[in-house]
Length: 472
Image (cartoon, rainbow, N blue to C red; front, side, top):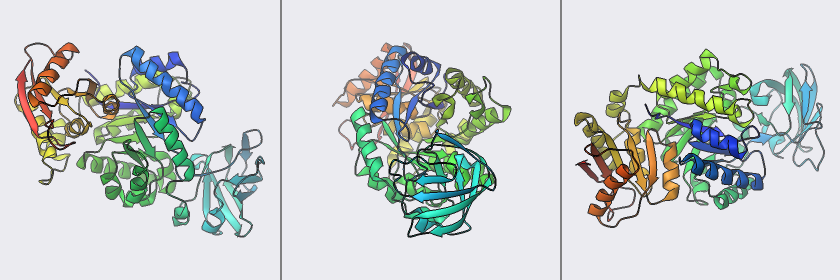
């Protein structure tokens, strides 16, 4: 059975070479994530070129996802790159530019000069993904300094994130100037998707949209974003449930419930949802995951995730290929028991103001009732494929597009297999060529019946208005 849930894999030192990337695509990587919090623009451009080459060699389209750092607080470079903090140790944070000075276990630099104005004595600060906890004791706002004491010790590395739960850091800019520079570099590279970190409100997404036409992924990792989730999703093309920072900013026991709510909301609005962070974390160092991690991936899929994401596992882990293979195996097994009929009927909100949703729903119902062999979707933007995918049909979804970017972007959509086709201005030519193309690709056989759904070439861009059953 062909896997329907997509796999996003982060590229890093463990996977950043040509042969490994080919093996990752062959193992099941659908989207390659470039984390712009690390590495230079030149390195990311080279990696993007290698991913494109690997996809060509493996014969599968792979989308490039640029993940912007966002307004995240980070410590500066540390002497020796790593320091150990022990319970009871005093630490002074110096807010603003480090002037080239390396931090130590006693004195660390923070990238944002406004932090001293946003933190009050008694507040908690987290380092190392929440495993190291400190408490602010004194704040010297004019000097830009915060004295803190370590409450739970651990190892801290250069440029790690600092989390300060609470409303104070809302003063951080939604899209830092550095992100706009990263964005331009990504446009030059030709990334297919852009993820915006630490979104707090819909305006954060609409601001970035003024600077790019690339589809935008809103990363939900702040309490404010959870509160504003529907407004954010309506202006976004996709959502990522980034459970790492979310589990620091919120009480960790709330994260599973928030995850389920966000995936359900994404389904209702027909937006792809990516579930991310620590999915197979033990495979950073071990050749097999824990049973709890396997259950976590399976539950995310049964919740309705379009894609599941690997971070450290493929970026710095010892088993990047095996991790992707394991993720793919879990997905294939879990998809056998997914509630397709319930999803088809209740998952997506249908609105009389946009008939495209109803046409997509009707196509999926027809595929089931008429025992069709596939749904074939010629599409310019990928929207028709996204709407059909959101309804979770049991038959294959084949998207065909004249846009190479659209072909790659469909790699994020649940159940969608995509390829290139010529552009047509006449409806009859569009349908005939779509039928010919799926035969040519070997996706369908002569005599099979398929449903073809699309927007009319002369219609409004992004609208789905046509459904036709055809025997090949």
